[in-house]
Length: 357
Image (cartoon, rainbow, N blue to C red):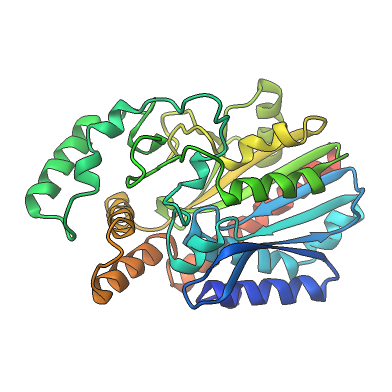
């Protein structure tokens, strides 16, 4: 049954999301992206609001911040649209806002980054200030994105040695973000991306006047197979205490050494206090493990290389795109069941927390 909520393409995921939202009477809005999808289709970030527009509390679930991670996030949203939890939320004066495909271009084209090779979870910054330097990334950039693909054994040996040497460095680490190499990994960009402006507009509209906003941003690619790590960013002790009361002591603060997520600057939920300054904000990332880290990293490297080589042979292009898809979406029933089971429990905890807030 769990597998039924997963779609094979962005086009299918979008259509099913919009249909399900319509069936429950949600207020639907579509923010159309200026570019087209991989199949030439219209793409966009769609929202579905269930519940009163003036409800004091708002529960947000977002998907696809990193492109093909949207396969799982979309499935979680579709399952929620078919769940009695929606009624539980609205009965407790909680509106539910589902943001489908934060990065529709990456979702459709099977790119973790957006149309400009920007990692959107590094892009929500104050661009009047320079993005922090990342000397750790500088040491491995040319190894991560070699001149030829697939990389030579010599390149792979040097990268493995460098990563072993840099292991444990987290402030910053290789994946913490960088704004120097537009052809590189974890590129923050130098200006707000289309998705940045779109998400801020969505939050300003739907978050206005709310007393409390809880936000789950669904991700995949880090950690043990199928395990959903509950990641909490750097917030006040009061907010951390509230989050732990809702979601349990297994909540991991992203700055802790045991977290699968690096310390980053410019993540999407971090802009909520800026756009909704009058609301209490309780945000979290739910990160599901897929493949071992080296396989995920190789997929990202191939994606970055391909972005700089638009004339790559079609067979190689398809091979790289497939590797990216596999790195962030495991097409196996056991994995899918783990994703939806853990998400439902997390959503229930969030609704219960908001109801008591």
